[in-house]
Amino acid sequence: MLVIEVKDIRTIKEFHGVAHEIYKDDPNWVPPIKALEDATFDPTKNAFFNHGEGTRWILATDSGKTIGRIGAFLNRNKAYSFQQPTGGCGFFECIDDQEAANLLFDTAKIWLAGRGMEAMDGPVNFGENLLNWGLLAEGFMQQGFGMPYNKPYYLKLFENYGFKIYFKQYSYHLNHKEPFPERFWKIAEWVAKKPDFRFEHVRFDNIEKYIQDFVKIYELAWARHDNHQSVNLDDIRGMMKIARLIADEEFIWFAYYKDEPVLLFGMIPDWNQILKKLNGETNFWSLLKFIWYKKIRTITRARILLMGVVPKFQGTGLESAVFWHLDKVMQRKLWYEEVELSWVGDFNPKMMAIYTSVGSVPAKTHYTMRYLFDPKAPFERAPMLMNPNLSVLKKEN
Image (tube, rainbow, N blue to C red):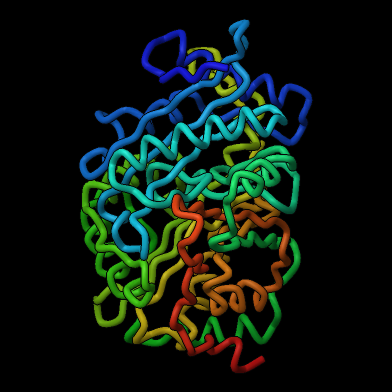
């Protein structure tokens, strides 16, 4: 078998082709947009190259058939926040062959070790963990946009190589046609109407303001996590460029207390319901199809990407209040029938409690796996978020 770095049109085509071959008979798989995958590895399109490196490979048999692929990434802003300097591998696809998988993992490991890394997480993305993050372990159904899908045997390939679970990622489903608990709405409306609080959805024509508000909330809401890293403005601006393409202004909300940003909520339509029909292409005809399917309201699901509240206001019911405002939007967009809340890590029990309290049910589990290059080094799971206070809703229930 031969590992080949992806550097030209032929190897890029093979990189995409191997996934289509592996999933050709799998009705749950949604072909990703090839241009978006390529952009991940393009320094001119991915802001993470400003503080990192990334590359990718394909694996071919001696006869020339492509049977696997993998990428490796180094985010220097994050790598040194762990006990062992840690990089990442992702975009992994492979036939059910441990020797082939090991060769791909070895390739990523050697590349990362050569850059001073002592561990690697996978499968992860070279970007924010909102998209393409984790190995599907339970809930083998069509995934929401940005949530990874893989064959069930992939877990065996990772574990046999030596990967262990660093944390579990849970996705919840909420039937929007079923009413929220009456007590929930009473609390939500009460908080939403407090005079010192203000709620507004994003307007892309004033996006720089919301980027600054995002940074303020991020630095406070996630600062207690042991692996917290200061946000990079270029990363956020890059993420907002993507948001313009995939988001709805009325699905992204901020809450303010006396004009200070204190809550961030983000949701996107489940574009996979359209992409399933486009085969990953971005040509003229696929664009026309996309416009048509969007016009006839093919999308009936949305996915909540993130929700963060600064610590001072955790436990005040703000999480409930933003749902109250969002519901006004959803009442005008009745073609949305289901909301996916994904994902929340097992290190964040508070958010898991909030998701359960609104009536959502667990539907899928992904794993973020970690492999330590030194087998004698002690392995530690992701630390718990230090958020002792539950929401007002949970207290009332």
